[in-house]
Image (cartoon, one colour):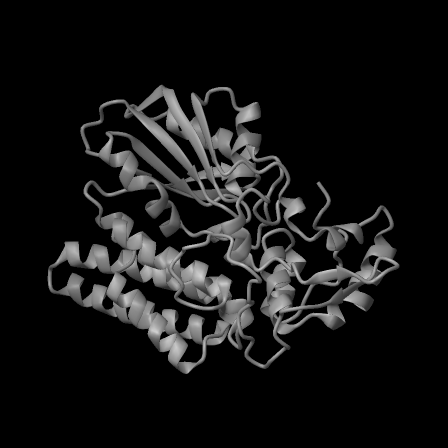
Length: 384
C-alpha cells in the first residue's frame, strides 16, 4: 500500500497527522488516548506532542496546519507564494479560531481573489502579472484542497481541485517559453504532462521527471525543482499519475503499485522529442514519490539517475503499528475490527486523517470521504 510517506520523512508525517495517539487496547482493538482534541462540528487541527523539526517557524500550534502554511510561505522563493499574503491569511485564521474549516475557507478565498486579479491582468494586457498571480492562486487553492475533506464543504473537493488546476494551466501557458502540454497513455486513460524548457532553441538537453507524493499538487513540483532545472539548462517534466491530480480528483483513479508502468510511457514520450538528450534523463520522487520513483527505476533502465527525497521503503509502515496489526488474511475479521472498534472512537481530526490518507488508494474511500464518511472495507486498500 502506498498510503503515506515513510518514517524517515518525519516532517511530512507530522503534516498528515498520523494517529500517534492510538494505543493497543487488547484483542486487536484500539483505544484513542492522549492529546487529540474531542470531535467537533468543525474539527480543530491535530496537535503534535513534539515538533519533528525543532526550531521551525510556528505559524499555528497545530502541526498539520503549520506544515502546510510553511509550504505556502516557502513557495515565496519561487514566486508560488507571497510572504505578506500567506502571513495575512495565517493571522486571519488564528483570529477566527484555527481549524480545518477556517484554514480551507481562508486560503480558498485568497485563491479566488488572486484568480480574479489574474483575469483582470490578462484583460489589461499584462501577461507577466497574470502568470505570477495565477501561480500564487494555484498554491492557495492547493492549501484549501488539502483540508477540504475536514470541512463542511467536503463534497466540493473536485471543484476546489479544478479551480487550482485552471490557475496552474494558465500559469504554464504563460511561461517563457510556454510549457508544452500533452497527455501520455496509461492503463486506458491519459496522464496530463507539462514539459518546461529553458528556451525554445530545440537543443537536446538533460531532462528531469519530477514525481509528486500522495497529496502534492503541480505547484509543489514547480517549487520543488522546475526553476532549479531551468536555471541549469535542463528540461523538467511535471505529470499527474494515478492517485494524483486529475487522475485522482476528476477520474477517481487510485495509485498503482507498479509505478514503472507510469514512468516508462513518460520516458517513451521524452524519447520522441528532439530537445531531450536521451542519455541524460533523471527521475526524482518527493515524499511518497520517494517510494514510487525507486520502484520505477528498478524496471525502467533508460533512466540515467534517480533521486528519492526521502527514500521510502514501505509507505504502509507510516501507519501506526496497532492499525497495521488489524489487517490480516481474514477480510471479514479485519473489517469487523475496523468498523466496530475503531471507526466509532475516531475524533473528527482522526476521521479526517483516515479520509485523506485513504482517498488516493481506493475509489470507495474517495467516494465515502466526499460524502463525509469513511470506507467500510479497510482490508482492501493495503493489498498489493
